[in-house]
Amino acid sequence: MKESYKIRSPLTKEEWQNYDSFRWDVLRKPLKLSHIPLKDNLEDISLHLMGIDNKNNIVSCGRLHMNSSTEAQIRYMGVSSELRRQGIGKAMINELESKALLQGAKKMVLNARSEAISFYASLGYLETGPYESDIKIPHSSMEKYLD
Image 1 (tube, rainbow, N blue to C red):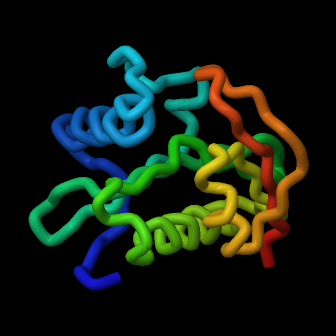
Image 2 (tube, one colour):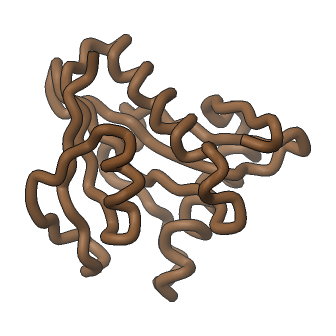
C-alpha cells in the first residue's frame, strides 16, 4: 500500500452512516441499483470493518459473521475503485480472517462477483460452485481453510 491506511470498526453514528453510504457506493451504485441500505438480519451480530486513510476517508469495507462455531463468512467486501490493486483489499481480508480465527473459525466462505474471483484466488480461496445473488449478477461461492 502506498499510503497508510487503518482498518477498524465504525465507532460514531456519523462513521456508521458514512460506512453504510460507502458500502452502497462501492457495491450497488456501479450497478445502477436503487439506494436501499445494504442490510440483512445479521447486521447486528456481525463485525463490520472499514479501511480509512489519513484524512479519515473510508476506502474499504467488509463484514464478518459466523455461520456456525467453525465457519465464518465475509460479505459486503469492497474497495474504492480508484484504490484497487494497492493492497487495501488484501489487508482487509487478512484482518477479517484474523478476527474469524479469534472467534474459532476454521473455514471462511464468501460469494465473489466474477471480476473478484482472481483476487480471492490469489489469497488462497477456492471456487466451490455458482451462487445466485440477490442482485442477480454472477457470483461464485468460494472457501478457504484458515490456519
